[in-house]
Image 1 (cartoon, protein in one colour):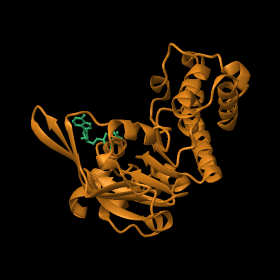
Image 2: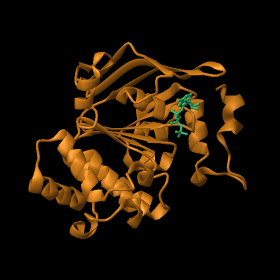
Image 3: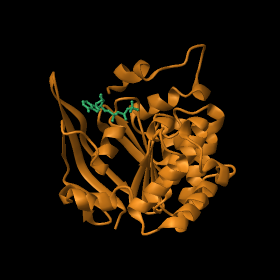
Length: 278
Ligand SMILES: Nc1ncnc2c1ncn2[C@@H]1O[C@H](COP(=O)(O)OP(=O)(O)OP(=O)(O)O)[C@@H](O)[C@H]1O
């Protein structure tokens, strides 16, 4: 049984201009211990797909799917209470803006502790010990000192490490990372990716990496789904995708990488759109 299995996922938003279909019949499967990258340009429906899976879309969204199962559990029919047990514990998510995701009014140690108290039976000193252990696991220097730091006293990379600590606090079976390095400096991006891959390998959890960056795909993924305008263009294991991309849109994405540039101008996806027929 797959960890996550979704068939024919559609998401439609009610907007002032009428209904807007953000996702049009996409399938996703993730196995235990697997890293799936979902790649595509802005607006291709990557985040919407995963927010739909987590049940985190606003009421203006209509979500339908033929199947939406996590470890065989039908996510479509869960009550709010049942969903809270799964989301945040068995499935957790990290987002692009680590500083905005943390509450500025509380120390990072307190916020990590609250996550643990909400989802585990830990109390008192056990909570603090586990928080320090988690801070250590995500490579935060001097956890004892950092415990009492507020988010604004930490760098973006350190805040993302706190978010990762929070996300893995309850040993999730599936972690969804939505552009986790986009808001960070290039040098820090690599460290955060390495950390995520290390934690994934150590724990054997499934990891879904949402990204628009083929470099991130190459660095992390086992399997890749390429999305464009709410549809799946291609799905392949990472080596096949880079070595013999089948879909014109995938080829366009790969040609737009700086290292594949020919001539004095970087090609863009739109240069390929008409010829490729997408
Ligand atoms: N609440 C909403 N109401 C209406 N449309 C929305 C809403 N949320 C997302 N969309 C639209 O759905 C489409 C897909 O958005 P989504 O955020 O999934 O894109 P993405 O591929 O993750 O891109 P990005 O990398 O920019 O986040 C976009 O056209 C977006 O404008």
